[in-house]
Image: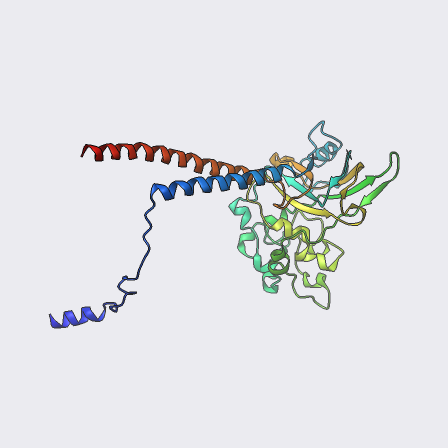
Length: 353
């Protein structure tokens, strides 16, 4: 008995206010006079913020064009028909003509949008090799099994970059032309293709392998491009600072979307005479049509958009705040009615006593 008591006492915590949980504590009692104003204030704050976000989103101008090529929807239908059932589809070009009656306030962002494309599919989302994309030479020669069936080529060469995400890289291209005077010549609008990827992706997650004799092509020697690519990864751009695994378009594509309808940034229009936006006049967008979407009943859209302090157009965020704020106000009124009703009953009972 003495040994048991001694052993039990040795394992007890110290007799202090902290270990014995005797520290002073605040135990709030949420009475109706405290809870009800909190609900109403929170509801009004959410509604005010929601209205600001909603009207700010509606103030963003967008100009969209569906160039999927469905029958009767413009000259891109020829390209869609020519590439149907062929992988990769043959090169084809089409154009989109539009006019602006007034200045399209800048800065202007150019996006491409895809619909019915499930980048959030789990098997698709893990089909990549992050070690390979970080430039690790061993991973360049030995891609992970998650990349299968785009792990090795038919000739047995490792694919770089491997995986389904890289193999499905969006490869349509666009150029914008402006006709300043009626019947005048078209002048090309400069598209800024730099800085379109997330800073952390471009500077941290993606790296090219070490150069071999100063050549990136030699660093990728012994590898094969993905089956759907027309050229190897080190020829994605003539700019040595924008090719290989650090190509901006490639980095943007590799950040997978959460929803089946998504848009990705293609370029900014902020240089030269177009720094303030797109002036009025006639425009032409030359489209190099490469990316097939009709096989999965998808659509391709080209979107010109301005931005606001909250970013791009997103009415959902404002609507969500409005709904939450309205719910808080509604719950507050319900609690107020319940409080008044039962308070009267308690006062009647006290009077009876």
